[in-house]
Image 1 (cartoon, rainbow, N blue to C red):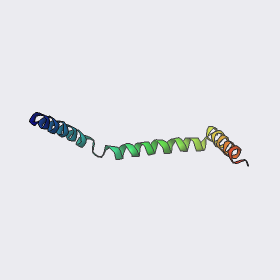
Image 2 (cartoon, rainbow, N blue to C red):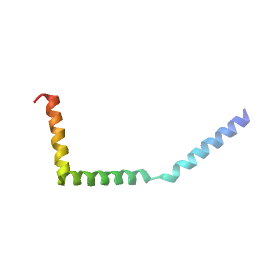
Image 3 (cartoon, rainbow, N blue to C red):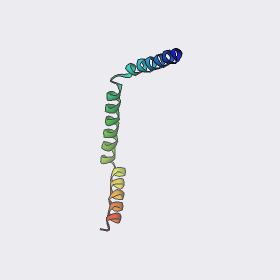
Image 4 (cartoon, helix red, strand yellow):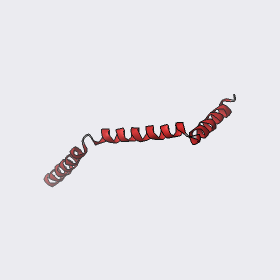
Length: 67
């Protein structure tokens, strides 16, 4: 029983030590993803490809709605 308890303690401490290394990183990653998405949307909005995609999506929505 005592060995099990020691192993369990070591395993938990090892996991907890690994959690502190990446603190704050997720916020930066989310910000980076948001910037990439904004750039993609900006490119699509200003090119003919963006207009073709928009028209295709609106046509499919009209087909589904029945308009």
